[in-house]
Length: 53
Image (cartoon, rainbow, N blue to C red; front, side):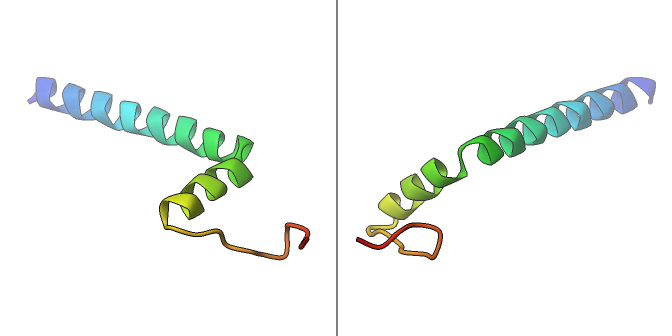
């Protein structure tokens, strides 16, 4: 039983670390990630954060 709990704890720790890395990455480059997402959706979204030309 202890081995199973040890593995579960390790999996939870790995998931937590991966989520923290992803969250940090998305905070660092939100506009670039948003632009990539918009391009993958087949268009460009215009919102109030960007100047209109």
